[in-house]
Amino acid sequence: MEKVFDAYTKKYFTFSGRASRSEYWLCFAAYILLYIIALILDMSFGLWSEEFGVGTFSGIVAVALFVPLYAVLFRRLHDTNRAGWWFLLIFVPIIGGIALLVMCCLKGTDGDNRFGPNPLLADSE
Image (cartoon, rainbow, N blue to C red; front, side, top):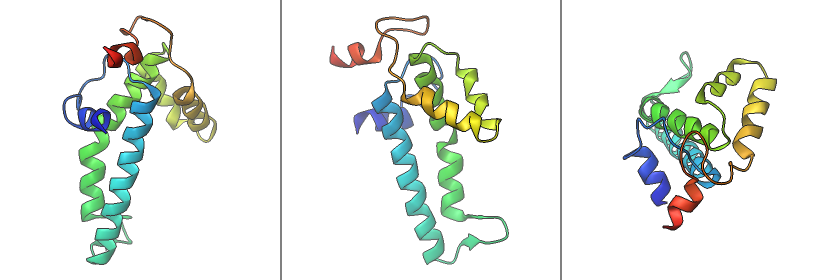
């Protein structure tokens, strides 16, 4: 849980360095959970807009967590020794999203790589 808190506070704008698989997936799960809670609040208070497909609370969550979610994605790609610009694959219909999912599931580079030290070794110190 500390990794998620750090990613959403201390590393809010940190696009450099590396993120382990657990850090990325915990941050992603926390985002989904917060977004679902925001959707429930929007629908409970009648703040959901069918026309725009967003509500007040869900919009705030999406905007507030957009940057740290992409920052941890960049760091996750760095852990697999890929540049963060690989996130642009998300704009390629179907195949791009699948390729990005696979990259996020791959094991990170053992030891140091061009983006920094192994996050798993740094966590144990």
